[in-house]
Length: 296
Image (cartoon, rainbow, N blue to C red; front, side, top):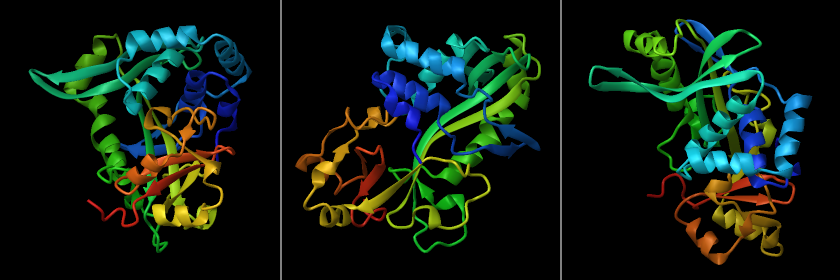
């Protein structure tokens, strides 16, 4: 399932902004410290759609913000900066601070991703952000465990990310050091929210029929598929041009038109590590080495 509104924007940056802030999250809610942590209740209403359309006609405010505040092309940092821009600009929210270190003396315990104020609820909110792209290795369709979802680099795994969030990042607000940090912003007991955006990639041919969803996953999460390089070459010998290469800085944009022609060099690189490709229907696929994930 693809967030269709993104491909309607001419500006790749506005497309990335819309996708980052309004596409279906991977998780609806999680439990942490006996509390139910939900996603931000900031839907793509008419006013926000109009704002995006206006920004699409002139994206200079967004370009300037990223130029001044985001000095990296790392996917996670760009994703966070797009959220900062949205929370700063939206009439319903006020961006208080972001990337705030939490220290106990000279020891840094972690950081709060975002602190913002919601005018609708009258609450200060601690928001944790992440963007992830995971491939399902549950080829035998065993139990729906989150441990079967791996990032392209294999060191990243969905169950580990979730454990890090529930056992460290979110509970940080309830530590003495966390409370001391929050008081610097005149915040005593913030509400907590979590936004994990991204896509889940299923083995080719399994699609929506694969296994019952893990209860943590949003049933409306965005889907793609993955296949080995040999499978892709065999299936696309006559029409390989149906697919284009999507470089990692563009994973947030979802634009076939801005992707590059799938070259021999890129196919060769897929022999060593997964690469992402996209077709004109805005469907995405990971091409992986034939022995992935056992290849070095």
